[in-house]
Image 1 (spheres, rainbow, N blue to C red):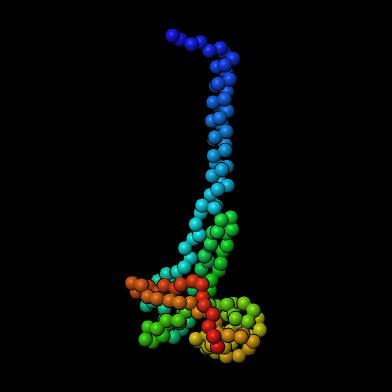
Image 2: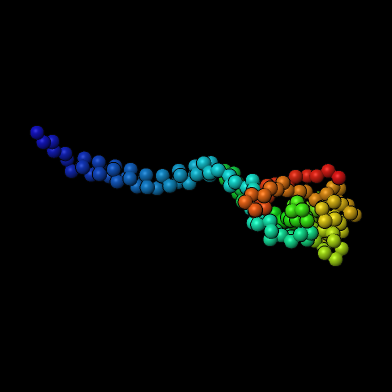
Length: 163
Ligand code: FES
């Protein structure tokens, strides 16, 4: 037994199906776009590999800069890190932040004075980041490090040291 449908019904059904498909084609990407940030996880910014420890000269602070981006839902935060790697004779390594502990200016190493100097208010720090003179209230912040397969691994973020 065959059932005939009217031309009007056929057009209604076809229009409904085509309309639904167009709605899905437009709506799904929008829904995916709206939901995707909440499903995204933060970038793992807990460590950074600075490469072979051997490449850092002994007793001379070596500057290293990098940017890490953290995604948290809709929020995207880029943080610029600057650090100094100080390798000692016995392969002990210390890594200091280049952010002055006074008001946050970037310090730079001055080999002739053997100090890190903050250009803003003339804060001075020694090779191991201890305050020598000026207004900084505490030593340069330091990073936890470890050696993995001969490479220097730095954990973020740096920690505050006491005087
Ligand atoms: S910001 Fe470094 S001494 Fe003031």
